[in-house]
Image 1: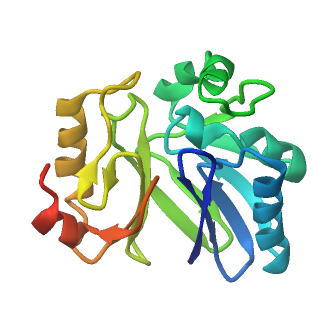
Image 2: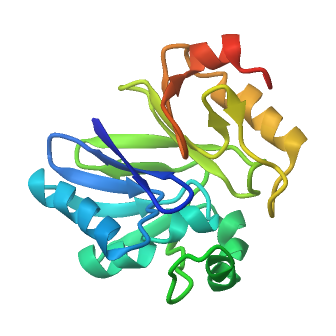
Length: 210
């Protein structure tokens, strides 16, 4: 699998395009919020002859959902996310207006996913971890074969996700990190929802919250 990171919107949110040798791709946490950002993701898809087949959201905070409907309309694909985050979409327009973001209508989750599920595309699959704490329905996606995990806003380099937002719970977040993410091998690369990549081994040794 290959991973392309694109950073969008005023929150510097990381959107990931994950694809393999079949050119089928999934798009994780689409945060595009302008015509220029929409074109940037389309240009990468076209340049690499990719076929998007799924949208996956690690969680549904406003900065991670802004590009869902553009991708649905452009590629006729569906969105997958945790059921317990669906309530966050109810006031998405209000939240967008609060932060000066563009959102015509609240996007919808088409398919609920949780730890029992897998995201399959091309010749590849990503397994799911339920990692609530930043939001109540937060998930992470990981590859056993390629040793990486996409953590959304649960774990970052040298820090952890906020818990003062709707659905946040510090004890729950720390438990999710310690029992789920840190159970992965040290060599797993961590692709977070904001900032640079890190590794499970680095965070075990250096993250002051852990």
